Length: 151
Length: 420
Picture 1 (cartoon, helix red, strand yellow):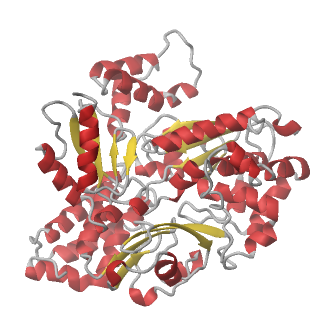
Picture 2: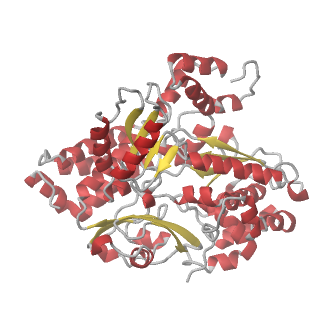
Picture 3: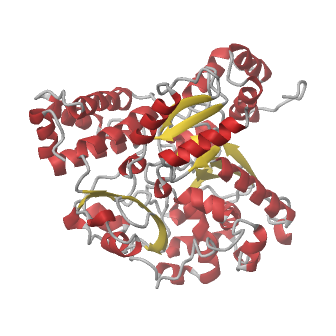
């Protein structure tokens, strides 16, 4: 964020969601320092900014792996054999539980609520990209591709 | 065959581009609205069309426009709700990704009609492609002079920008959306006052779902009479239905409101996968009570679904076959509601969590005899007692499940396992 720019009320506070996204991008996740900087910049209490970071699920206050694998556990994904099956597969394949990160720091596994891909389920997100009609085979290919970037 | 209106360009290459939109009749309603109609006429036209909100509540759009105070000296806003998150629903994402200019044209006309000069798109944070498509489309509309100062020489000016949400289902509720736009936690406001009188930054605000706005250019182009001839008298116009679950062709189908549920499932969606028997259908997204196979002839319209004890909601149909465990379905939907409860009011915050605990216990074969009664009682204690409609939405999977499949719940308690 550019320092020294005067931001008018009430638009100042409206910048908070965007400011948190920018800080998260710069710091990797919303560290204490990141939250304090956003708070100072927008002249808001630190606790207030932290409460925003904890309310919205796309903000992270803990570090994650390079790729966050988010498997949709919505009803439409489950009905076509997704959700649990894909989560189980990924847990075994990566040797971790939901919420954990692989030791090489590459993958974090999470479950998420409906991704609005019910017609092309099962669905998952990897960072900002959406992957639809997922199967264990397609997960294998995806993981291989992502690993290939870091050899 | 029904002539597609909202999705007519979806199959075209680069359907999201302004060139394709214009080449197929796009941005023709805008000059008509700005040069030939005064705002009052537009409000009358939309009212006469019978268009009702497509975000779930089905409120008449023309009346919503009419609630906005008149007068050019009042600062007013329009918000475009792209916070699609109702499980089973994926129409808004497709509309934004495949034909965003149709929505923009609707936004400009709606803003002109209510006298707003500033409009905001609020989009779900997860919709990364959607954000990109919105930004590109808005830039394109500015470049052609459809947005900005003195649009098409009419003297009317409008600025439109995109705000990205950050992961909260509740922000689809219009007052929570406004809070989030203001940079606050997405906790719904007390109503009244409604956004039409006190909305964004305390100013009158019109909030519409993207599908609602996508209808506007067509109403202006072809007239209210044409529009209201589609559908039923109380549910007019085309509707994008989303169908998922145990059917052969999952996806979106644009059909007139009032089309029988049976036709959508067995004709458009190609029937049940593996020819299994139908067990239950969610007609309008996770918040709407389920229907049983004997109700599949119900027309998919606001009034007929209400008579059948449920709602049209977002028009998101989730089809479940005979092998589906209804306790598991309720547990999954409750996990969603418990996760998405904003936490502001106690019945919703603790009620959804308590119901989830019971459903998880039942599903794990550890259900106690009193669990079913406790589940039902908890649901009733939430009903009508929460700040926003989410509490009532959250109890629907449980109450409709208990009403239709109580024996299945009891089986989980007595046999410690699932009957299917």
